[in-house]
Length: 81
Image 1: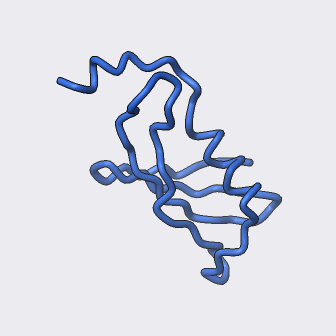
Image 2: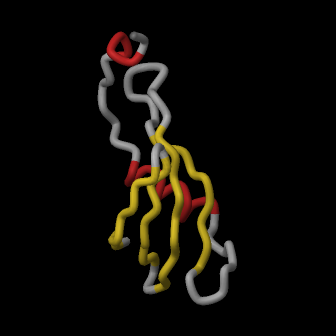
């Protein structure tokens, strides 16, 4: 998986991602973690660049989301101010 061309628009991050040699565009939204080790990005949408199809398996999407969501011990108090 290769990621490139990142564009941040408010809390939405748009990026080009190559999965198994196929180019996709993903949009993910920042969300404040609610507990330690919580996810900080949620999928908004994705599409294959050549056709606009959404043809990835749930496993491929999960692998992408696991890549962009670090497993960090967030100090939740910092986000509740």
